[in-house]
Image 1 (tube, rainbow, N blue to C red):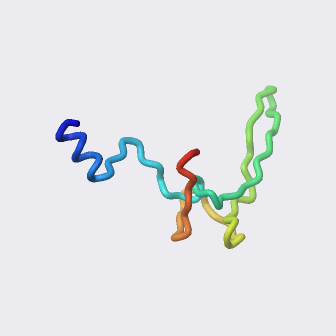
Image 2: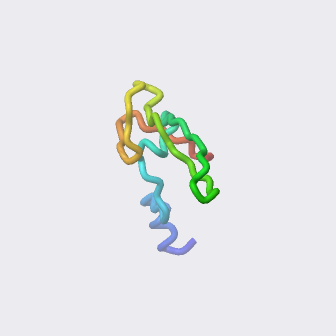
Image 3: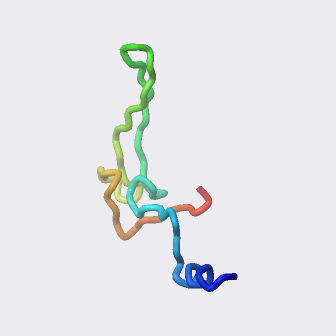
Length: 73
């Protein structure tokens, strides 16, 4: 292992980090509906974005101390 590789591993370097935001949390819930557009295209609308722990409304880019993420996703 090179010196740089060892230093990266020691520091926990991650090239593409996953942000600790509600949208990436295991407790994030939302209702997604598929709608047909005017020209026949389909698109998805996401509504009722909620936290499964507290049940309150959240924004996708917010975060809290209860953030959890399954690393196998």
